[in-house]
Amino acid sequence: MSEVIVRLPPPLRAFADGKAELRLPGATVGQVLSCLSDLHPGVGQRLFGPDNELRPYINIFHGERHIARLEGLATPVRPGDVVSIIPAVAGG
Image (cartoon, rainbow, N blue to C red; front, side):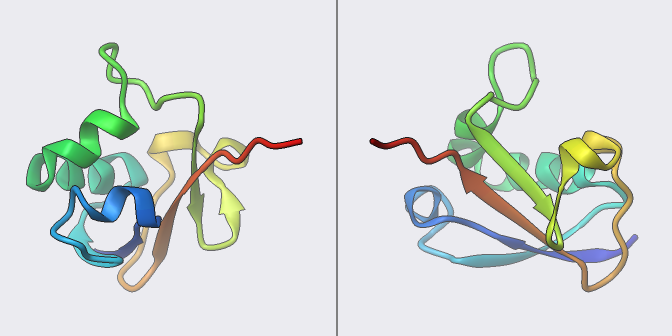
């Protein structure tokens, strides 16, 4: 199984022992995020709602592409790929 680099935004780092990046196994983005949630439940609670769906204000990128434009959580990953978690930003 491939090991993927997962980049965490500053608000989630407190729930992952202060780490900005983690290397996690998985064949798809969903498997990688599931592993992240198992290792750091506080991160998982902020990524996924009670229905186990990604919360609407969380954006996940595989490389530079939003997974919504790919295969969603089923997007395949390869060793060394980068998955970035980006919370939505609102302002005015």
